[in-house]
Image 1 (cartoon, rainbow, N blue to C red):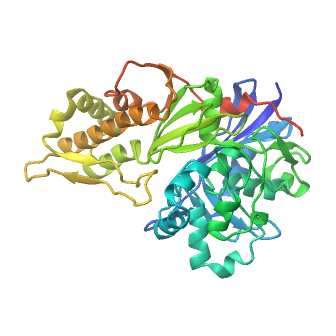
Image 2 (image 1 turned 90 degrees about the vertical axis):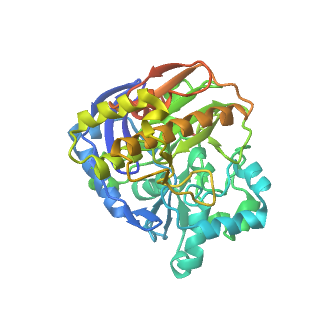
Image 3 (image 1 turned 45 degrees about the horizontal axis):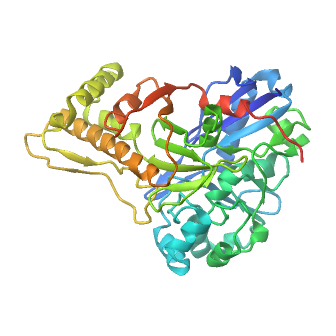
Length: 437
């Protein structure tokens, strides 16, 4: 196995690591970068993100210059338009962005829900399927987009800046809303025409493990790398974790964190309007995904608002204790767990409490949040089963030390076994060998 430099770029931080045969030999401290939130708009300054990546790589020291290849796991979508020099014309519009509801409605109305699902594998979700972000910028910033030479996602931007390549992988391409995700045949003329864009602005789609380019001298100086080092196309972070599980047909992989992502690996994709269907990134496999956009983040929001006087460990103990008591602990209060919207709906829902009275306690409101998330987690199982792929009974789980997975799995229908995996993204990247084409 080749020794790799792995870059795990999430929605708030960057981790760099030296990888060797599914092992993480060395990992840099997490480097955080801010998101800019303005109402329904959520984006990231591309230059701030590049600075965070450089800091993470440089913290590895000289070892970063000794790797045989570089691999990427990136948040998705993170949509951006670039000029002829690869400079960003727009911010990186992240999956948390919900500004493009009107544009999503228009895109789906023109082509039809069934056809969009059949080609793309998903509905045009505001922010989550980035064609809606492109449509928003066409309407609100047309003069900016007139300068665009390349439009893609985060791995597209990083390659353009670090290797000069114009690429994207199938997992990211699936969430552009312009790719034939169910056939992997390439950019869809119908979807591009529906958006009113030329496919010439889009990157070349290559599988995630392909070497797309080599680090330029300018990038080597900027990031603390060795010029000429091969860089693989990269993939969505969830795909890397699934690769670590073995990516068997029917495998469930649950990433439990601020966002709770439940993915089912399949070789026979069947789209569903309440699920996201996308390519794995390598081979002819797909992931069917259901996401709770605000999971742990809802619970820790409650701590900030209602329990600022309670130490973090005591708060975690309280959360687990309330979960064991079940719905009765909520005292008739209920909660809709959509504080960050809904990933599979064009019309965006919001979080809401009902049943509050003057006697309602903060513990009951926290319990209501827990029960809302437990209910939403369990409701995903029959949705995934409806796609025709029978899930394997052992679920691979990646989560934090607070073990919220034990809570969210409480009411899952059926009998399941859970197997915890650590460093899922990095170790998943380490399992891939760079491939020249």
